Structure formats: C-alpha cells, structure tokens
Length: 177
Image (cartoon, rainbow, N blue to C red; front, side, top):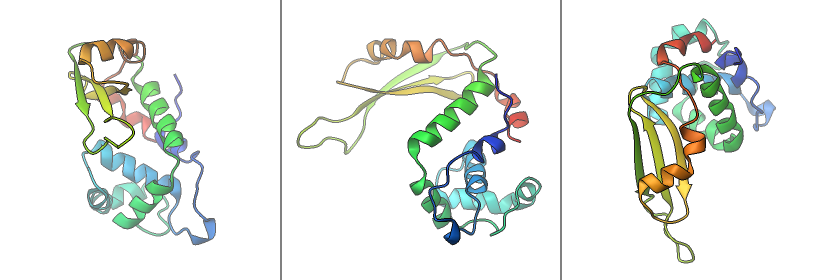
C-alpha cells in the first residue's frame, strides 16, 4: 500500500492549461473539488460554495494564489483534464486507502439504460453498478454490451469488483495530506 497523500498525488497530474494564463494552481483546484465531492457537493456552484465556506481550512494546506476559484473556473479546469488520467489517479488513491479490510455486507447490483444514449446506428448504452451498502462506496460501474439482467452482468465484472477489499471511511482523513 502506498502512503502518498492525496494532495501530493494530485500535484502529479499533468496540467493541460497554458501556464501564462493560469491564476489558480491545477492541483489546488482538483484538491478543493475532490474534497467538496467527498462531502456531498454535486455541481460546480456547490463546489465553489464548499470552498468558500472552508477557505480558512484550505489555506492551512494550499497557497491559493488566486483565491477560491469561481464555479466557471472549476468547470473549465475539469473540462480540460484528461478523464483517463484523472480516473487512474483517483482509482489508485481509493484502492490504496481502502484495500486493508475485506468487503462485507450487502453489495447492491443495479442496471440502468442511459437516457438519450440511443443513436441511429447503435442502441442505447446499458450500465451495471455495484454499491457496497455497508461501506457506502461504489465498487464499480460497467458498460455492458446488451441489456441483460444485473446478475449475469455483475458476474462478468466480478473479477474487478468482488476481489477487492475496502477500508472504512474514517481512515480517509489521514490520507488527504
């Protein structure tokens, strides 16, 4: 298990912006966003509100040369980030933290068809989600080829979902910095 804090991991992300035009540090914007999302913010306005409400706390760990970014800045920065790079960073961080304790309790499996995903030349996108109810964390989300029942789709993803172990949330705080 790697003990690299979240903030240090975020600072390793490649910045896709033009450096001469940047007021805010990429790592700091991503860190504030990650904290806000983990605390329940669900849109750019909520992330900005969260950051303003906890500005004193953020200033203990961040430089914030441009202050707290606006909701438009949060949105713009994330629209430029490479989704695969961010997914890899975030998934690795969560796995490193939560790998110590075996998964227990109920795993809810749910299948959904993504609205508006049907096109003229291909059918709708079908997704299956696995959720650890006791731990309160998503274990995985899988795109399946055709609509099927959730159990058969979950078996296909079982090597990724059910072999992983997860720790409790109270250990997360120590890995933020």
